[in-house]
Amino acid sequence: MSIEGDLTPAPQPDPGQVPPAAPITPSAAPRSWFHQHRRLLIPAGAVLALGAVSAAAVLLLVKPNSTVEKMVPATQDVIVVANVDPSVSQKVNLLRAVHSFPDTKTDAAIDAKLDQTFKDSGFTFTSDIKPWLGPQVAVSAKLNLASTKDIPAAVYIASRDDTKAKAMLAKLRAGKYGTKYTWKDETYNGITISVGTPTDKSQTTAAYSLVDHVVVFATTGAQIHEIIDTDQGRASRLVDSSDFKATLADLPSDRLGYLYVNGKSLVANVKKEMATTPAMALALKNINDVNALQGIGATLSANGDGMLADLLVKLDQSKLSPATREALAHPGRADTIVSWIPKSSDAFLAITSLNKTIQSLLDQSGNEASVKAGTDAIGLTGPGGVLPHLTGDAGLEVGFASNGIPAGAIVLGTNDAASMNAFFGKLLLLAEGAAGSGFTGSGAGSSFGSTSVLQPPASHITKTTYRGVAITSWTSPALGSLGAGALSPSYAVLDGMGILASTPGEVKAIIDTHKGGASIAADATYKTASAASLTNPAAIVYFDIARLVDAIRKSPLGSQAGLGSGSTVSANIDPVKAVIITSGSQSDRATERFFVIVR
Image 1 (cartoon, rainbow, N blue to C red):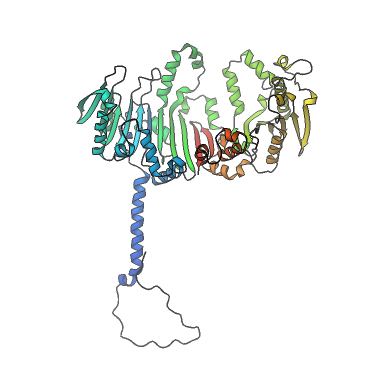
Image 2 (image 1 turned 90 degrees about the horizontal axis):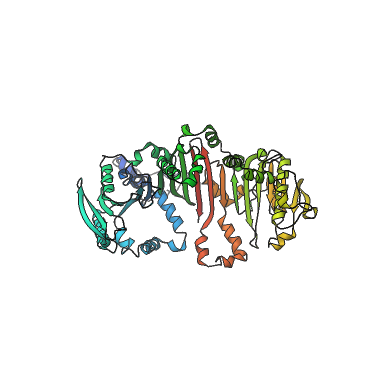
């Protein structure tokens, strides 16, 4: 930007020196305010103009005009919409993520990939579709689980150049697919509809039209009639339904696309299908709260670190049982488990309400004798069983060693250390039996269902103390014969948490973490993943892909998996740094977010 006039500061007089008297000259004519300040006004005006243009561009791009949704009939049960021209932030973030992969480094490479997709159709994306493609593409359908062949569906493609769109339709009609139909044109409310009857009677009919700057493909002409009626205000729209609005309201509005499924229609279809299937009739009786389902919604979006998918199941809480409503309203917080997960872990799972989930499954089993015998045998239920003493907090953490063998641990929240120790002891007993080693006296098989606390032979059990915590470990020659010689299942219980790990070292790592060591929450990659996830989730699934891939690459499995340096597999996996799934609930919904870090 150039600025008129010399802005060099004038020399200042030396302090203490009397400046020379200025010569007396005739006073100049007074200048206008604009003339005096023009040097400031010109650049300021330029900045304001640029700001106005930028603001206008953002306003236009942040909220793309809805062109497709307004014509989808309310009779449709499913709609999927892709925003081809999303907001500025979504577009920038999406391209950054897509350009991270070797095969889509540039926009030209993306076009080439799309051309490859259409190679057998007689079309090219760049020549036949891209010149007229508008801001949205969508698909809608009516559910019919009884017959997947009889599902009325429609495809909507917004047009920004109707002339070029018509040229593509003409080419389609005369091409390899279009010539398999006998075409007839009809007019409905001033709009031409082309209906094709297949020459192969086993195939279904097809229809297309250009409706209000949208290319529409459907399975019948009657569907397009309904779409035209909807667009022209004579029929109800899906997006105006209360269930649609309630489902999509709490999902991200700035997005690349979304999915909606009519919950009531889905439930009606499932019930109808199950009622006519004898093998599923019993399961139908055990389904609770299904009538509360209003809708299922999902969105896809992008941020500066990767891609996000959000899922929401909307429920009518007035139709839920009090127990279900209470469980949804108070799902628990998984960060209780996160604080126990070592920073070195490559992946982990953290959940809450495990005790309620197990009890619900047992209730659904109808307390069958075989199920109860099994749960009693492992110390889950029965006298002294651990289930009543589980807090519901549970986790699983895994890490890969350089030899390619994973190590990990299960953590279980408890309010009774004795019952947890007994439970772990029974699990080791069953593990000894499964490994093929006998016990003194009766074998593992004969002890199944027994309520007494049995232990493997003393020669296989070692007890150590680490930082004041007792650790019990089991070793067996059978593990070596099974190729698992590095394993030494170990357990400990401290501060309301039971730990069952693959090695004593894993138990020690978790003890260190709990006693002040760095947890996974301090890891930079996990911080990025967590920041973009649901707040206070009830469940977390996390994979540090970069660390897992690096560990596998350095192990003997690396070459077998094709993860060698410079390989195509590595080049396409390396941009994906981590994956995290978080879930939560409220009294009227269940939510889930899937986030992939791409760099």
